[in-house]
Length: 197
Image (cartoon, rainbow, N blue to C red; front, side, top):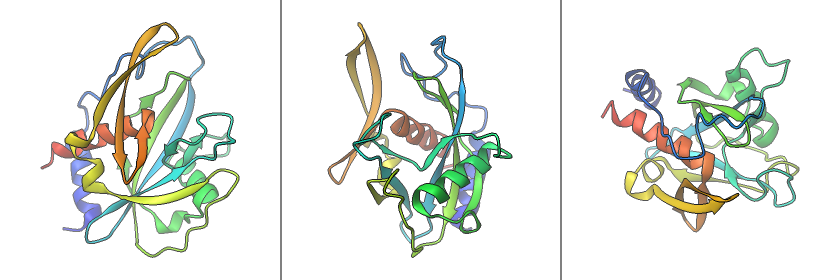
């Protein structure tokens, strides 16, 4: 069975389970208008699969310097959230939609800033000549899928934020800090995939 087939089966088997809920994050009513957004979770089809992640420029107004999946808000011209994720990935890292085998959609994640983010899981071939847009992407790297999905690597941290404690997930790989919404979406994906193991 191919990587794409295994992932598709796992996503289907895990559908309907409760996603990760941490205080102050998913499904909290912030009073802000909900902004539909989508990210692409690009899994590279290698003997040991990897995931492409990007680092946002430190000059960006929102989430500067954070590690994230390629993605952003849904535009009126996007036919669907999948189309939004594919468009954003092409704009940010030069990943052509034709090179993505879309597997399915993982658990929607609502951020405390009002974004309702739909993770679109896709498999891409290795060796693509990707071109990050320097205005949106300061760096790009691949992390091993098995490392990201390992529950022992998914650490819950708690901080005080605006007068109350908030918890978030953090994954450290190769000196890089993956946290917040990106880490939570990885944790949700790992729990979904566990159901098919």
